[in-house]
Length: 202
Image (tube, rainbow, N blue to C red; front, side, top):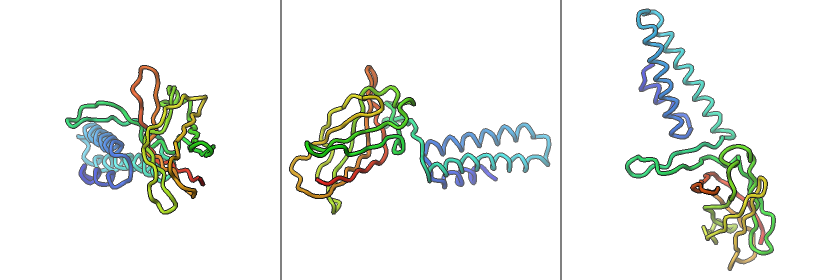
């Protein structure tokens, strides 16, 4: 099994790009190490290559399984045009935060619940809110999008966000959230990406 074929097999599996790179790199290193270790034993080389490839497939298989079920969040470097790291984001947070509508009498009140409040990055958040969102009607038309929202304080494992519902008529709507944001004193705010949806009647 050549390195090119190995890389192709791994990249065919659905997973974050940086995870693909890590798996391929680790597999290459393992193959090189085992090949060097057994360089004087001709008959063992094919078995070493097969064992190394099987290890890579196991790692990739775990990643693929995670992609089809619950995927844990992970930190990702934000890079500028020349590749320098200028910040950090947190990806795939969908299964780590719950959004629920708790009131619609004076705007749309949303409760954000951190399901892993003792784990990073949630354990350091003092404020937690919605960064990017839109509200769509029953036909999928956007009626409100990314209006400025206040950053509420965290109370235990929850935070409450209020979204104004100005100039919308009665009907059924959906809140679609793609980014949340958490903050802590003396720290740069952290954007968390995912997909959250809440339906409500106004």
